[in-house]
Image 1 (cartoon, rainbow, N blue to C red):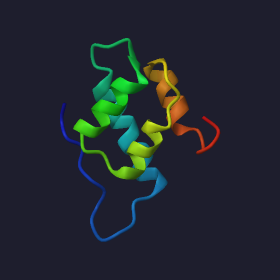
Image 2: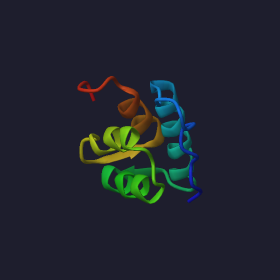
Image 3: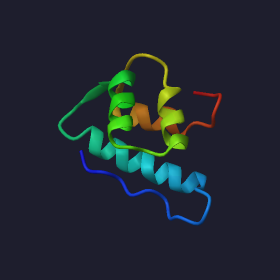
Image 4: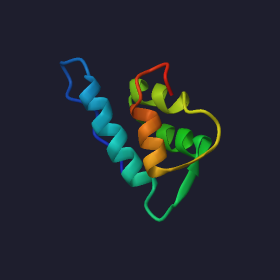
Length: 82
C-alpha cells in the first residue's frame, strides 16, 4: 500500500486535510475489494502511518463490514454521530 504524504509541516492539519487523506486511504484500501471490515481498515491505517486525527476516526468505526461508500459516509460524519 503506498504511503500517503503527511500534511505540510509548520501548520496545523485541518479537517479538509483529514478528509483528503481519508478519501485517498479508502481509494487505496478498496482496490480489488468490495467490502472490508472495520478491523481491516484499522490495520491498514496503522500500516499506512496515517496521522492520529485520521486514525481516531477509523478506530471509531463500529464493528462490521463496509463497502467503500458506506465507510466514507461513516468516516465523514461529524464525530459522535457515526
